[in-house]
Image (cartoon, rainbow, N blue to C red):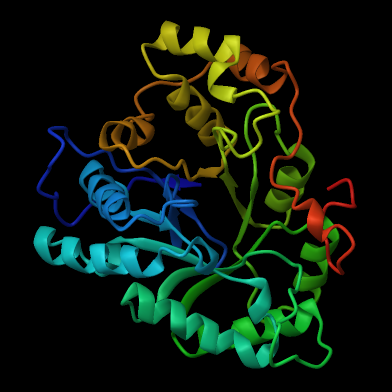
Length: 323
């Protein structure tokens, strides 16, 4: 269910446009998540991080998605602190997501990993802490004894108890893994973050996640151009380009709007202020049922881009199953 976001204050703009505030989606624990967030994967340059976060807050974004493995938590934290002080934006009005990496899955490593992220982000808590991948990655030093995915989850629950995390979630998990967590969870996951875009709809997993009360965040809505150059660029699919011209929008806005109308949270990535603003300016038009159907069946079909095939033989690799 969407609710309108009412900001406590308007930021001082640096890009000459009025901010757009994304509607909020209800989480199963009573909290809310903005339906558009700024993706920060592969953004590590200090200047570009500062530019992107500043432009995003000016444009109305109130959701920032990062992760330990992105190596930008410290830059994001410094920019958030400065920007919140400068603009008067309240901490409680910004939704911050970060993620637990696979080397930190052992129960005794979970809290130290979260606390390290909080120090880098210069925050007392994060709004959402995701299990980034279900695959445990062995440490080169300090090897740990045997444990399960369920053990990791139970350790993550203690982060909520300690006030370090407001909500928990999963990322890149399949249905069976979701079911295992739901079966033991004292604090249930609220979000599933997975790859989802035109050409790779991930329909069955999204349908299932919604059926068990998970909000789904779709990452790589633009197909992460350059990550897998053998795949076509969704921004250049003819029907996407044609719809953009028809609506007076950019191809990126069409792809984001497609995700929004599938009831997804969408986290487009950009470091360019103009594009950052364009990417949230998608609530003044709608795609028709026929247009949604065209996008859902668009050719050429693509496959998963983030398959991490080097992990194929590791326990808990999620993509052996159909979904």
